[in-house]
Length: 227
Length: 274
Image (tube, rainbow over all chains, first blue to last red; front, side, top):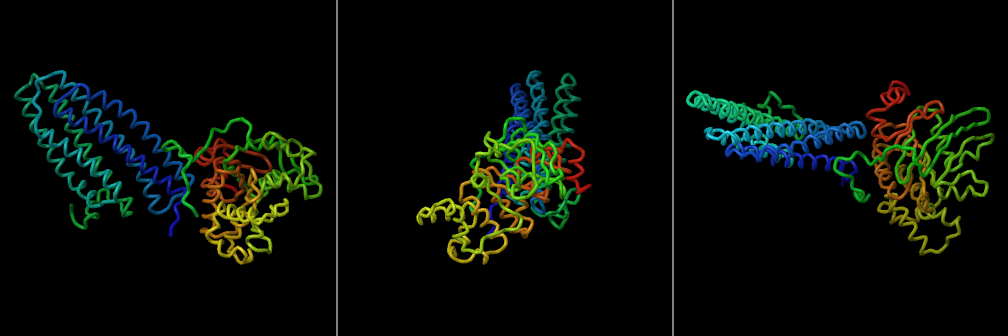
């Protein structure tokens, strides 16, 4: 029977820290998505506070990974976990940044009322939030089907973003007095699409941890067929 | 071996438990220490503070003086003709060179485990209680308790409890080394010195000893000499790098292995010389 080593406790703690960070990011993203659908001013400050905590956590997790590599010389799956952890923490921090930016735009729109929010923004926001949630759940549980689902959703997020752009361009033409608000919504849509892309990255890292395969740019390796 | 307890749970993502290396007095203090074997000086003006209930590793190339310093903590080098020293070593604030100190009592407080395990040609039971018997303890009940306590602390109880009366020489190499640790622990020392305790062991046995070291530091101050830098990284809280009898750098193990201040230290740990 394998004994539990002190190092196993270290790795478990590392994983728990990533989960905590993921929960914090999900909270921030959830606030930002709700804010862009029904613009509020308060969301910006809420996301800013979370973003500061995420920055601190990112540095701490990164430092811990450096120490683990230097002091423990992990191999095989443990090495993959530590390397992927460094990437995932950076990905999560990026999502936090993007969520804060979306909330900032929502705040602007809330203060300058009257802009029409295309329904595709809500769909895109909820999709991005779902992809982020599923990517982290795949990381926690090792559920590669979930990871696969996140990766295949990327095309859907791309299509929704394109629809948002088309809608917003139409609104800019029909309501030029609100070009600034619609420009902010364009950027918000782009940022939500970027969040979806980062969630795909987390799903790819998860596959790397559990299968040892780097599927970046080679998603067909996950399914054996084109996704 | 019991699942390691995390009783001193660090704050999330704290590095391996370390404290800032500062000039506060350690449990073991070495002050401007010079040492000679005859006319050959082997330690030059060494000063460092070893904290209580942490693991401190001495690393460095062969002949750098790390084992010499280690053996001076319990004055094992007194057994060598022609030695002399200047400077001082103190434990819990008291010099170990006090003429009123009985060296054997010092060696009870500062136990030692050697590179080559050296169980006595006696039973496992008699090995563990040897130091207690020499100290005058003869109560069977007390000795039985001490044996179980020592063997449990050395993570050997489960493997040895049904064969306590068998010869210690029937144990495997790794088990013998854990028996030697149990023997050292049985007299309830304050410090455990380990001179390359794993160099004669296979990787599995080495792993068990390293896990044991991480448990032992909850009760004892541990100083370990090792040629295996990775072992120092895995097991220790602080690391001292020696070269040609001089202390080159002493800091938290995390710092030594991720961002050493001295180029010599970086060259050594990256394998540029050894």
